[in-house]
Length: 271
Image (cartoon, rainbow, N blue to C red; front, side, top):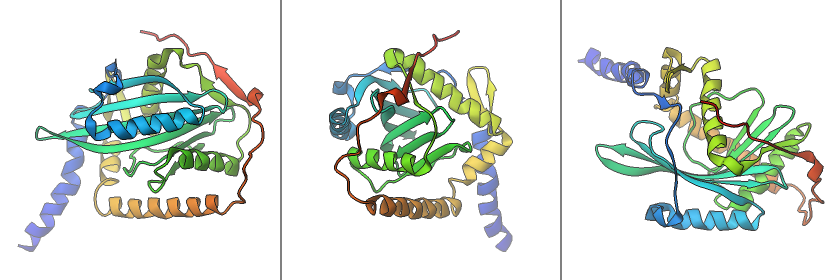
């Protein structure tokens, strides 16, 4: 009986990653369909609209709204891409659903800011509650703060984190005239970076988890590691929010030097 009790969790811990390893993987070239706000699911429409309005008031422009329905098996995603060319920051509002036994359930809905610098630093600040499974590069600064619900607060924290790390050079912003080309490129490059870390391998039109990737990514989202990581995430989030809120209040950050932003042309897509 005791062996049976031990065997069950062992089978789960060592067997579940096999489902990821030999699953369908991630689509390297997912279908992107422009989506109108009238087509948004009612569960997220009000929040998506409110956040878009808030970001517009902060100087961001909407460059595209997409639905991505075949990035992975049994998932569906809608997203709004925005850019602030003056500040050099990008933003994205994302909602992701999962399908289990024919029932679609909203898994995560979050706002995210990202900024890249010439020196290689890449800053990403989001309010998603969902843990990630990707390995970060040495100059990737990710700040995950589920406690901050308002876009204005999240962007203020994003700028605070960048000042704290003091990156060098100009901010790099790609011209979003062809948002689909841009999104396809960063999607593929994200998985290619994980391939360099040994977590994925590129096989034709899909990125397939390696043995290392399947076990590390799956275990990271299983108990007790998931509980430990969530606790660490919340502790870090509370600490950076306290540090940010503890800074002297300033009603004016100073005029932004537009020369510090490099608006870079997006290279044409290759086939």
